[in-house]
Structures are given as structure tokens and as C-alpha cells.
Image (cartoon, rainbow, N blue to C red; front, side):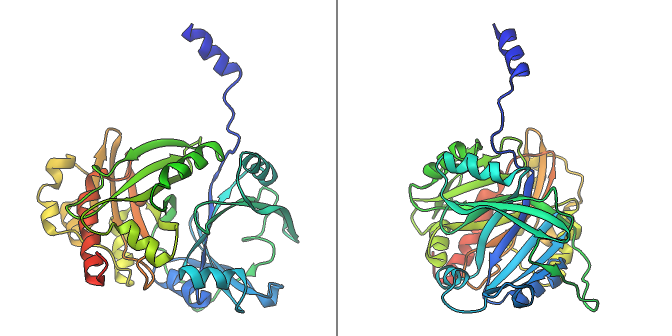
Length: 377
Ligand code: FE2
């Protein structure tokens, strides 16, 4: 009987109705895109890529695209009050607007998701210039966050129609070894994790690959719950967090208060050499959370042998965890705005496909020390 099923699956495989080729770009709505672009270039090692604004026919906003390896960020700011970008910033401060996903067919991605219940934010739209044609469409997800579907197989330009190439011959900072988006985490409200898990399952065909309850992610004071959603091919991973009851305020609640709603909590950026990457980022002023140095006293007993020397890990505050497939090294920045909202994770995977469960307690205690200092615990 099982042989028959295997044969059936070979003949008629379960089709992925939303094949995703990865993250295309992350777009941030910010108060001052010119300065934010400079920060990501000078501090994170991105290169100038493309610009759109009044000079290219975009009257109400300016956007700067920056790139490092497979990683593209777009910083967008409103030029006038009363437009959607200005409203987003008035409500949330600086934050992630779009987690844009590369697809082979943007029209089909829109049709498949909207017929399963997604709320459209952009009908399939063809954009053309001398470098070809790019098709995009989009749907809403948690809070005011959206997913744009980007089909660029017939486009040869640097970024997309509407943008012009942008570079500054006097400012070309060295890269820091950041390669691509590993995962993007959403913070949602009380009792909202499971509805959003259902959304990613039913509307986008994702699978719940890992779950953490408040026993897994709690300290003496606060807790949260998390479920990791993965696209069918595993190229896109979206963990979803919600706050859980504790003696004091969960970090997810603090985020929801200051972001004024649900939104993207952190974007994890992959590197092949975390010691080099974090050394470069710290030397350029990126601030990271620190765990107590006692973390390193028992580290090798917990995770077993690792290839890296312990001394630079301890010095830089890099965390290590192991699962049954290998290990990973990770580190979390402090929020990159004055509000305690969006931050970045730097991650190097050496076989491990998990998310650092063994580090949750030390990490969340570090976050709580920061919350305490802000008076929000
Ligand atoms: Fe993460």
C-alpha cells in the first residue's frame, strides 16, 4: 500500500501553489530615507544601487535601494503629509512595510493567494522601461505589513522600472559579509499567533515547522510564544510571536506598544563568517545585545565541539546553539530606531536549521535588562 502511495506521489506530486524563490527585498518606511540609506551603507556595508523620487516621476515619495550580495533593502520616505507612507510613519515610526518575495509568476501568486482569502494591496501590475518588464502584485499580512510578489525574469535593470541607477563615487563602503535574508519575524497581538499561522498555511501554503510555547521562551519575568512558518521549498521562513503572561511585561508587548500595532520584529541576515561580520559591524557602530560572560563558561559543555575559537565569540558576544543537524552562531542588535521596535539578527548556520532555542533564556534576560533601563519591564 505504501509503495502505491509513493508511486502516486511520483506521478502527481503535491504542487506548491505559491512557489517562492526567496526574499526579493525588504522595504522600510522611514522618516528620512537619505539618512537611513547612509546608515545602512556606512554601518552595515550596503552599496548604493538605485533611486526613485520626483526626478524619476515618483511625486509623493523618495526611495533608495541599497544592496549587499543577495540582500536588498529599500528605504522610502514621504515627501508630503497625508500620503500612505507618511501615515505609516505617523502610526509606527520607522519600520518594515514590505517583505517582498521573488516569484516566477506575480499574477498567479496574487490569484492563488487572494482566492484563498488574502486581502489585496496591489493587483498584478506590469512595469516597463528600456531594461525590460517587471511584474508585481501584493497582499496584506499582519498589521500594516505587506508581501509584494516580484517577478523579474524579464527584467535586466539594476532594480526596477521607476528607479534610476544611483552611486556615489566618493562613498563605497566595504561590505561586511551579509549575504541574504535568513528569516523575518512578526510580532502579533494576544491570541493572534494561531490565526496568522492559519493564514500562512491556508493562504500561502506554508508549513508550521517549529513551535515554542511559553515554557520554552520564558525568564523569571516575562514570556512569549512562537511558531515558525516555512514556505513549501524552505526558502522563506516567517516565525510569528505573540506575548504570553508573565510577572512583568513581555518584550512582544513592549514592541506592540511602541510600534502601535503588529509588525516585523526582526530580520535575520545570514553570513558565512560571523566573527568577521560582527567585528566589522561593531567597528562601524552597530550596537548588539550582550549576554553575561558566564554564558561562555558552560557553552562547550552544552553545544559540544565547534570550529570557532571561543575567545572572539566571547569578546563579540556571539551566541551558539546546536540541534540534531548541526550548530548555528547568532547575535542580535539593539533596536535600530529610538523606539524599541525593529532589530536585526546576524546568523551563521553550520548545518543547524533551527533558531537558537538554547539561547532564548540568556537572550531574553539581556532584552529585559534593556527594557528595565527604558522603564518598560
Ligand atoms: Fe530570529
